[in-house]
Amino acid sequence: MRRTRFALFLACCFLAACGPSEPLRLGFVGGLSGRVADLGEAGRDGFQFAVEQANATGGVQGRRIEIVVRDDAQDPAQARKAAEELVAAGVVAIIGPMTSAMAQPVIEVAGAAGIPVVSPTVTTSTLTGKDDLFLRVTADTRGYAGLSARHHFARTGVRRVAAVFDTRNQAYTESWLGDFRDAFAALGGSVVAAIPFASGDDADHGALVRQLLASDADALLFVASAFDTAHFAQHARQLDAKRTLIGVDWAATERLTELGGKAVDGLFLTQYFDREDRSPEYQRFRTVYESRFKHPPGFASVAAYDATKAVIDAIWRAKSSTPVKAALLGHGPFAGAQHPVSFDRFGDSTRKAFITTIRDGRFVVVD
Image (tube, rainbow, N blue to C red; front, top):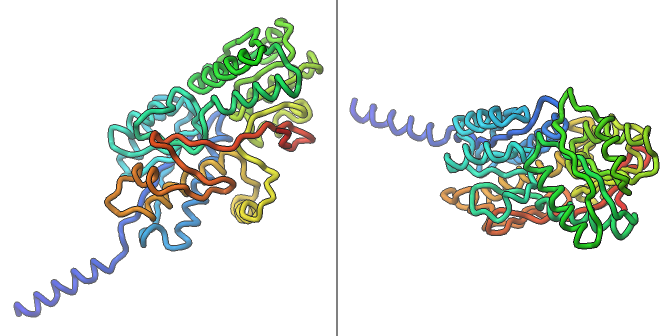
């Protein structure tokens, strides 16, 4: 009887060892509701696509990846709650958030739990060079704002810029505008007006554009989301068709062209994504992505895909006992949809940037 019981015990242990492994959980947090939902939804799709690809080839070291998605609603309190829920769910890393304004509450919660946060699109320079658990696959605002300042001073002849910036994403917009102002001033240009506004139903885009035009600037700069940039451009075209219009990388989603129509043709934007990339690798990625989601990828989906894939590949390459951040810092570079991803010792990255303009509803690289 004892031998029989011992044999049954060994059999149970063997079956447990051969059973399915505990899934590896990855979290995503982004704005999936409200005016910036286009950014969050694109990020979620890129995140999900990378996980689906990994699971199709066996997951990570035999473990299937399980996704846990939360909406931060572009609200700091909701972002904190979302991060707490992801920590409670046992995720090993959080992909997101998608806007700089949501970064701090997510980082605080995740950092206290020892969980790295890898953002696709947070670019505020206030987080640069910090030895914490925050990493990102894009450069900070200095790179994009500086490129915009140099392009417009040298190529479009702009010398005086009037800007409007959204205080609901202040960590990003003030960082971007400050970096643009510094780079532009160093060249001999000036930002002659910087008008804050709070995005929402009460925003009077027409009145704000009239304030910008009153400054007698050569160009109008909209440091805002796709939704608000589209409305600013429409009012600017109605009131004055001659000024150069400048947008920022945050606004460079497909929603901008959908909402803005002909008014956004000729608008310049910084980007870290080339929609016209003809490389075989990217074309394969785009074909499969379009088949899955029924629309082409945008910059946020590509950046989220790259961030997620970097986390998955880092865990795959490292020993099981290696912390995820150490794996990301020590086992790169990681292949991305268009460019490889590598992190410096602080978890910051560089990424090739472009100046694009919109022509007939398409983003076209001009610099």
